Image (cartoon, rainbow, N blue to C red; front, side, top):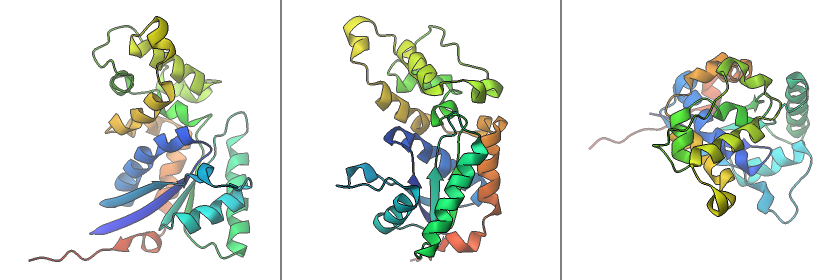
Length: 220
C-alpha cells in the first residue's frame, strides 16, 4: 500500500484549512491510499524565520516529509509573482541541501475563497446545521474575483450561526472556518477555479516514485 507524509507551510494558522483539500487532491491525482498530513506550526518557535527560504529549511528539519506544500495567498499580487517567489525560495534552499519535492499552493486571492462553495458544511461548521436563513454564497465561477474572501466568509459564518447579540460577539469565527474543510468530502467543485486546476496539474506532474513510500503490509 502506498503512503505519503506531507508538510504544509502556510501564511497563517487559519490556512490549516488547506490540509483536507491537499489530502483529497493527493488521493484523486496522486493515487495515494495512506496520507499523513502535517502543518508546520512555526509560530511557536522562539525566533521563527521571516524569509520563506528559512521557513522551508526549518519546516523540513522539524516536520520531515516526502512532499512539501508551500502556500502563499495571491492577495492583490499577480499569482505568477507568488509562484516565482516560492520557486526562488526553493532554489535558494536547495543550495543548503533542501531536496524534498515541493508544490506551490497559491489560492486567488486567499485560502478563504476555496471555502465558499459548500453551504451544508458552512452551516455545520457554524454550529447551526439546520439553519434556513439565506447565506447568499457567491457563484463559484466568480469566487476568485472577490476582493476580500476572508471578510466575506466571516460574514457568511456569522449569518449561518443564527446567533445574535452577545452570543454572536463571542462566536469563534476563525475556529469555525478551520472546521469547514474537515466537513467537506468532495472538493471537485473547486476544479472550476484556475488556481485549483494548477494545483492538481502540478501534483500530477510530479514523479510519483520520488515522494511515495512503499509500505509492505504483513498478512497473517
